[in-house]
Length: 163
Image (cartoon, rainbow, N blue to C red; front, side, top):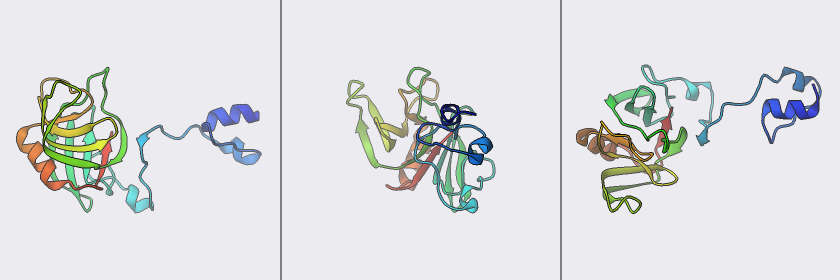
């Protein structure tokens, strides 16, 4: 295995030489946001969700469900969600709540209301009240009651995992 092949196999920015190169199994999983850190216990999954015990909010895009989590236990959910459209997908990865706005209006979409917004990813991606029948523009739509619950529960700095 050549050095160039090894670099491609394990991902840019990582170069293995010698026996370690032969043991490489492929690239690390691609994510956006920040990967969960910590020991093996921090990587344990919360039962019934695709997220680890370090998450306070968990999203399953394919299943169109979300959960609120406290100390590795589900406190709300699964609740129905509507993710971003195929051309404007909700980003996948591990994020932190950046800010909240109970009565937010979108600057991008003609001042459209985004009640109970909890912003967690760059580009204005948030949990907020919205249609459960129409795709969002990258956000995670929730029913009014669920959007209020997510808004009340989540705090700036809380971890959000989107799968």
